[in-house]
Length: 74
Image 1: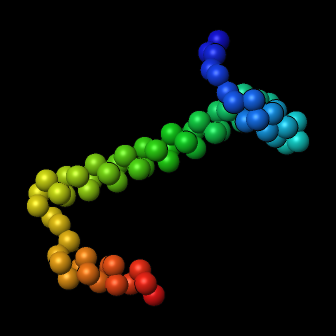
Image 2 (image 1 turned 90 degrees about the horizontal axis):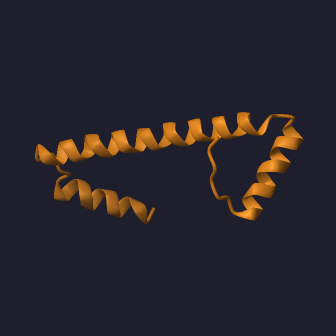
């Protein structure tokens, strides 16, 4: 069995969710971990791709950067 420390308010919300959705705590934990790990893995992959592009010298031009920041004010 694995043991982790969880903030009391989060633990209460967790138990309430399990009760209200008629799901086991194991089901909720497995789903939450799966979603978190998939999202984090996608982030790491995008970051790796961008770092590889930077290593190849692929950067945005000054014009592209200026356009990006100018559109933020719209």
